[in-house]
Structure formats: C-alpha cells, structure tokens
Amino acid sequence: MKKILKIIGIVVAVLVLAVVGAIAYLVASFDAPRIKQELAAAVAEKTGRTLTIDGDLSLGFWPSLAVRVGHASLSERDGQQEFAKLDAARVSVAVLPLLSKQVAVEEVAVDGFKLTVVKRKDGTLNIADLAGGQPAAQEKVGAGGTAPPDIDVAAIRIHQAALVWRDEQAGKEATLSGLDFTTGPVRMAEGRISAESLKLGATLAEDGKRIAAALSVMNVSGGTGAFKIEKFSLDADAQLKDARIVVALASPVALDLDKRTVALPQLSGKLDLSHPDLPMKTLALPLSGEARADLAKQDAQVKLATQFDETHLKAAVDIGRFSPLALAFDLDIDKLDLDKYLPPKKEQKDESGKIDLSVLKGLDIKGTVRIGQLTAAKLKASNLQLKLQARDGKLDIAPLSANLYEGRLDGTLSADATGNRITVKQNLQGVNIEPLLKDLADRDMLAGRGSVVLDVGGHGDNVDALKKTLAGTARIALSDGAIKGIDIGRKLREAKALLSAKQDATQTGDPTQKTDFSELSASFRIAGGVAHNDDLTAKSPLLRLAGAGDIDIGNERLDYLLKTSVVATSTGQGGKELEHVKGLTVPVRLTGPFDNPAWKLEFAGLATAAVEQKTEEIKGKAEEKLKGKLKGLFGK
Image (cartoon, rainbow, N blue to C red; front, top):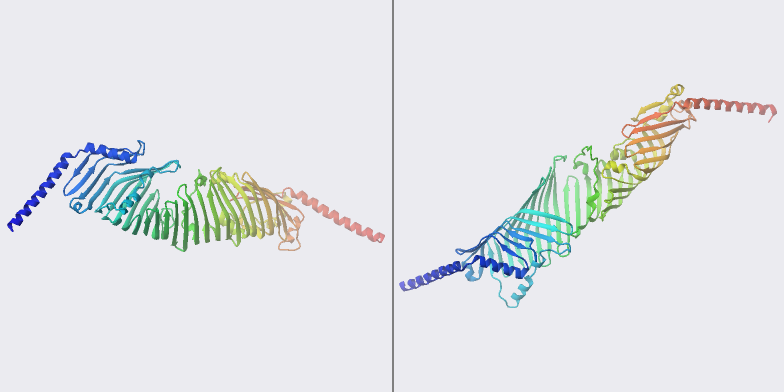
C-alpha cells in the first residue's frame, strides 16, 4: 500500500512539475509585440483590414487561461477610417475541461466597444465582406472533419458599447450609445446553442430628449441558424420634452439566421403616453398582435389591436421596403373622440397655424382608414372612409367620404410639398348647415338644409397665408333656412319713421334675430383669398333677396349688399305693416369682421323713391278712372 501511495505521489509531483514547467515556458516565450504583429498580419491577409492593438496584451494561466487586451481598433476594408474599436477586453477559460475537449468560458468581458455600420451610396454595406464562411465550415464537418468542441460560457458582459449607423444614400447618421449587454450561461454543443438569458440595455440622451431601453431574451434554443426564444421582452422609457412615452412589449420569437427572418407570433404589451396638456394627463393603451420581418427581402408585416374607453382599434402595416421606407396600412376604428385626448389649442400670435409639408418628401405610403364614429375639432362624422397615398412629396386622399350633419360628404383632399400647396374638392349633399358651421368654424350665420360644393386650393407657410391665397369656386343651395344676425322683415316694418326722416338703420349682428327663407342659392368665384358673389337669390312668402359682394376669407371680413323687396303685403304675418315699402328695393349692407359684422339698412335714399312711387300709383289710378268715364260716355 505504501508503495502504491509513493507511486501516486511521484506521478502527481511529475504532473505538477510538468504544468509548472509548461507555464514557465509559456511565460518565458510569450512575446506580446510579436503576437500583435502576427495578429495584424493575419487579419490584413484574411480581411484586407488593419488591426491596431495600442493597449497591453497579456496572458493568465491558472486556474483559468485568460487573455487580456487593451485598446484595439479595426479599420474599414482597404482604408484607414475606423470601423470598430474597443477600450479593453478579457476572455477567461477554465483549464481542466480543455483536457476533455470542452471549452468552459468563465467570462467574456468587453468595455468601450464601438461599431460603425455604413450603407454606401451604391447600397452595399461595409460589413458585407465579414459575413459568410459558416456554410464551408459545416461542409468540412459533414465530410469527416473534426467537430468543434463543446463550449459553455458562464457569462458575457459588454459595457458602454456604441453603434453608429451611417446612410450615405440618405445623408443621415444615427448613434446608439451607452449599450450594456449581459447573459446568463450559454451552451454550444453539437451545432446547437442554448442560453438561459440575454439582456441588453441602452440610453440615448440629447437635446432635451432621453430614451432608455432594456431588451431581455429568455431561454434561447436552436441550431444550424434557426432559433426559438421562449420570451422576448422590450421595455422603453422615452422623455421627449414635456411628453413621456413608456412601452412594454413581449412575445415568443422564431429566428432564422440563414433565411434572415424573424417572427413574433404572440405580441402583447402596453403603451402609456403622458403629457401635462392631455385632459386625462396619461393615456394607457394595451397592445396585442403579431409581427414578422424578412431582412433578405427587406419587408415586414405588423398587426396590432388596442382598446381604450369606448374605442376599439385594429391596424395592419405592411412594409414593402425598409430604405427608403415604403409601407401600406389598414386602420379600422369603431368609435373615436379625438377632442377627448388631444391637448387644447393654444393661441399663437406670431406663427398662426404653421404649415410644413416637407415631411411628405421621401415618403412612400398608402393606406385605408375606416372610422365608424369620429369627433375631431368638434366636427362630427360617421361611416368615414378614405384612401391615402403619399409619394414624391405629394399626399392624395381620394376618395374621402362620410356621413355628417344629416347629410353626405364625398370628395378629395391633396397636399404638395412643392410650394406648400393644399387643394380641397368636396361635395356635401343634404347637410344641416347650421350645426356644421358652428362646429367647423364656430360661426352662427346661416341655417338650412341643402348642398355645398367646394373646389378650392391655396399655398403658404401658415394658415393665414394659405387663406389669403385661396382660389377656386364654391356653390351653395339651401332650403327652409335663415340668415342669422338680423330680422329684415321686422326692420322694414319699423322703417316708416326712418323713411320720413331719411335716416339709415344700423345694427350689429344679433344671434337672436334671423331672416327666414324658403330657398337660397349662390355661387362664388374665389381669388386671392376673396370669394366674390353676384348671383345670390333668396325667397320667402313676404320677401325677395338678391345679393352681391365679397367675402374676404384671408382677412375674415365681409362687404356684402343684399337688395330686399317686399312682394306680398296682404298675406302673411306682419304683411299689412309692410304696405309702406311694398314695391321698393331696400339695400341692406353687411360689413365688418366675421365675428361681429354690422348690418345697415340704407333708407336715406329711399324717401324720394317712395314719394315717386306713390305719385305714380295715384297717377295710375287717376288714369284708370278717366278711362272708365270715357268708356261710359262713348258707350264703349
């Protein structure tokens, strides 16, 4: 027994001495400058890139084989511009498992890694030459080559990394910095990979904006390029000036690296939007749906659904091209009250309603929108349907249809970034004009039911400039309505004293007064923001109205003349009281701003006309009597 123990001791001593000798030899023979040169030469030969190791290069041997490297960088292919760099890196591998052809990586740690990905003007990527090689390696194994060893990685840690994306075609650049990536145990065996957890975090802060995001992947498994992820989750918190957006999404994932496809079949989560101007301060949107992307074909499909208050929303997005972006969408909403969620409008003195259509440039979007019931800026509509297309700096919404205010709207809307131009063509039939004007323009000037046809366009950097350039045509035809602000019949009944005194009657608009009509029609020619009309006609049992004048839309002022005549005094309420103006045409002038116009009945010039009219009437009656007497005298 003692002999056996002695032999074991000798063997152990020999092994220890061998290990110590090997370590001593490696230490003595380790030449960091030479290794740096050899590594740089190998990288240049294989990739055409320049590897520069400025920092220290060192080895550790027990109980782990560890390699440490300081600052290093890799250039672009055949160039001096930096492609990637790191501040420090460390890889440690347990020694004993190597004896059984197992690689047990205790840690992979990288600090300050930065990668710049460039899409060149010809559409190629600066990383294309580094991709590939994997299929050839697999063929060697299948042909009887040596299979790769099993690899277990206890942890991977990447700290303060950065990714730069530069698109030379579009002339744009984006940087994602502050990236932190950690994992739990990762195992690679027999061509398959499994990992318990992967976590990635990043923060972007600039110009009053701060976006923090965390990505987590749980239970990854698969091999030969295809992987399944039991749970993928993304949490993001974005502070954009006064607005805060918090997003949480989760789904299983199917990933195929060879086909370059990814699918999220059971997407769920929520989106919370907070803003001090929101009526409810915070709007919470639960999300559910699915998504998939094919990176090789550069396309993706997303379906999402959400519900909040009384609103159910479904959206489907089909991205046909990533860059430049081309997408189609379908949006279906049952009921939506935008006024309930949008911040109240703020008065802007300097830049009233700024218009900037440059956002249309570069867009390639088409879509369909259906909304069962919609309230927006007080305007109410139902069964809204529209088709939208934005391309080459132009937006076309055609057709656009809806039921509104007991009638129907059909038409088109277009916008052009070239010249900041907007064109509206609408045909409203059977609408109730009074509530429409109140909700649309906060004006209570007209009542009635009928049709309105618009074909107008304008351009400008803001709403005021746009209104002053409006040009086109408009027509209106109403029945059983009223002109709000004045009761012309009442004023005419009170006009006897004014006629005698040769005085005009002036009053500001009074919303409690109105001039009824059974029918009204008018057409307008619009130029330079001014709508000119010379064919207005309106009828009532007692009155006839004819009108002409200008409506200055750009400056929101009226200069309009109504010519009023009494056609019946024997019938109708108050008819007898209009006997003194029967047959006369009374001018009624409407002038001033839209919100407070002045009505002026111009009686001053009518007194003489009234006397002349009476003289003519008396003369006419005398002539009739004379004719009667002469007829009796001559028996004829």
